[in-house]
Length: 249
Image (cartoon, rainbow, N blue to C red; front, side):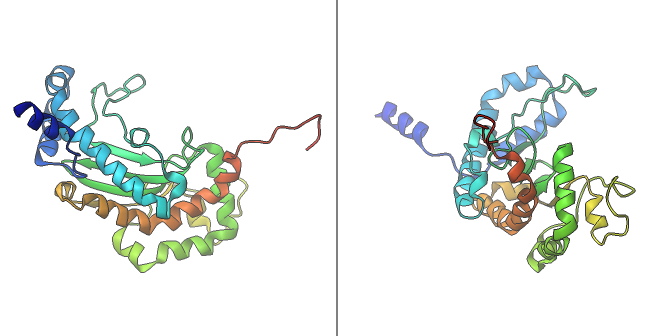
């Protein structure tokens, strides 16, 4: 009977939110960011952060079938590893002190494009969406798209629900118009951006609430038109090229 009870407990589904132990682990990792500390507590990381995060990501992904079907992917592909890539960094700390997930657009997994993101740390929960690290060609494509579609894009940003829930654009922008673009164009403030994204930060304890996944979903839905707009000029470039047969198109 004891054995059956243990098996039933092990098979119980993981809740789609964190427990206080998860935030406690991240606070400890901030103070002891070294392999010895982490390895001795890896089971805690797996149980209190990795598995709950996968459950959260799966629940969000299921909901995205309705408003972002081109961003649906296995949870394991969306969840970022907690291990830092220190090969080209002066910061040699081995672990991130947050857990995060990113939903890229289908066909753009190896590039950037526009997508959906959230992260949890002891400092807070960041919920964001947009194009954050567009490659050179993607930067140009979005900027050229904005030349003709800036009014439509501004309407998306001006929606009252979006303005209430999110901040203005974050990140860097060029100090002067990019080469080849008209200096006096009415969309120049948008065109000079190097990234186009909105985010909000809520209390870290939000991740402990049973409806945490729904909170993220609600925010993602608000920014679905933004993500779709930014991906519009990129989808054609990401589509597989048709093979030319005998020199004919």
